[in-house]
Length: 417
Image 1 (cartoon, rainbow, N blue to C red):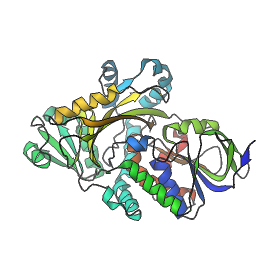
Image 2: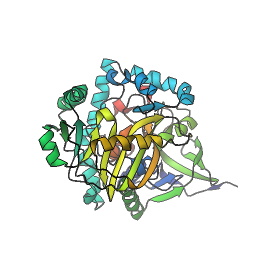
Image 3: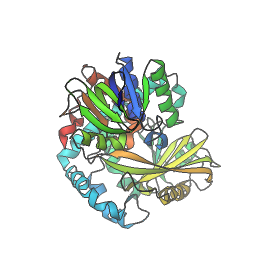
């Protein structure tokens, strides 16, 4: 028999970094809030992301210099993008939208939309961590982008020019200065770009759990269960979960990462949301130390110093939400990381796979529903969930409570597709 819980003013579905930060922002604004997830808070993509506040990484993936290489990458079993053959037919509509997002006028709009969020990301993250008494969770150093030679550097020039156009801080350095900053790097790296604002979190999962802890201390409620139905009524929305319980919400915020598309479909409002499956290897005994995170664009990997070790990740796999992990993807990035870090040892290591929510035009949805009153979406952050979480929470809090958002949310509307 179905039972009815005490009505909640706002129900936030998804307790990853985006949903947890929004729930906390709303309770600060006086809302009564329940945070619902089928898993423990922060156990999805927020657990295994690369722990980077990557403010410089808003370059649209749909730019021609990327998609022209996709056929070659997909033919390479160790390429930076892999599509499992059986999933290809389901990906065609998403990929067509991806190509449509490569038009020059569209790219300029997407660049501006990404830059507007990322320009605020570090300051908003620092403010949120300060509220939590967790300022020491953020490293003081930034990220190094590596290039073995001038040809590799020129191949990444569109990225650098974009940062120059939008005023993002960076510095080009040579091999000698690079070795002073990171002695563990191979001498084969001839040049790098320093991104001082691309700071790292010591433990991204701990970031989420501290937000949720503060949320609960302020009276926020946590609920567990998978959503099996959403029924909008005239004044409230009924959400059925697997426990047989029905939660009643005056406002509903959908931010379940890559699973948000399933929820929007329940409301008759489909969105072109895919999962970019990401892999990492957490190495607790690497035998080296790093002060900065590092990325090597031509090798498609990233290494981040985290609490007690380093994390190695990179590449993209398109295979949907149900396919079993292919941990060879994690092993590929570790092999490439050892090209840059020849003394790296892979001891006390674990491998992980998670689902990043990917929209074909790269920028997220931060929007009220076009079909159902008092329903809101915050999803599709791709590789920038932890980067833009604090900013997203602030903007969505303003939108939901009737304040004017500090930036124009039109570029992130749900009906843009």
